[in-house]
Length: 370
Image (tube, rainbow, N blue to C red; front, side, top):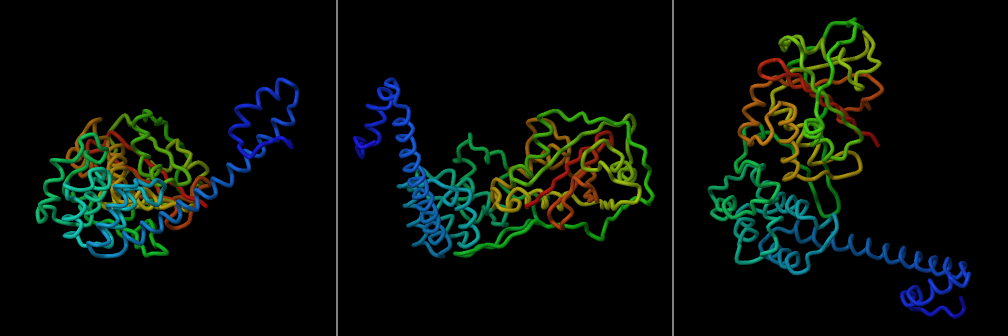
């Protein structure tokens, strides 16, 4: 390729097709090799720029005070950088953790500026609501539900923190690191472990979950990018009493309990719905091993979606309707020693929801692994 010029783009356009037609396939292959090498080098440089941009944004977001806020917002509005480290949901999470609500309300929600930052505002509003900020105290926050884009996915969420959201976990971040974790393990209170040996007879019930219902139930786990998850819905011929659920669950046709012997560990506890919501929210917002989840605003959305699917709320239900259905349901948290589960504390769990009429049992199993 002695005649190859440094302008690879020009060579590709002017030489590749002609040389191939002349039978010089080697020339074309070597041209491709040079292009591949340059592509790899450029991609590496782009990744490094992304890391550096993310660090700049993190420094500004974690530095308290209106000066840093204004500079960050101006940068995001003017340059609109891309990459995970500058996503609005991530930046909003950092701001909510490290800045005063008064500063955020007066600066970020000032609609005279930053007209391209509605996604950031939508995420930040939900971050603040979950942290217990009273939006009525701050006029810019109070007016946001009236001026926010109706098409935004987060517009479905309630504008005030609901009772089932009152006990949530957030990560702790600094300039160079972070700490987070999904609450794991069964509590001592509410335990309903069935006696052993359990029956080895399998239930005749069959899963009737539609694709849409399945997607709703697993929404929080998939958003958190956990290792594996699955969901099932069973409709018994007769109503199931809550006290019957612990003995029924190990017999159901679900891969998560396949191979569970009569004396293998199967532990279960009845839980209040707010603790189930807390678990689903942490799963989605903080993520599984090797990732940081979708953060609080979208974690809130996907936790609500999973609660809706598990509780059997009708399609198109409002958050208030979902909460009412969930509060009237009976909730269980279980663990089992089977091959499907990873069986490390905080890395797997099962959730079951019995409908208010006791004629529908929905199950979610989640497992995370490195």
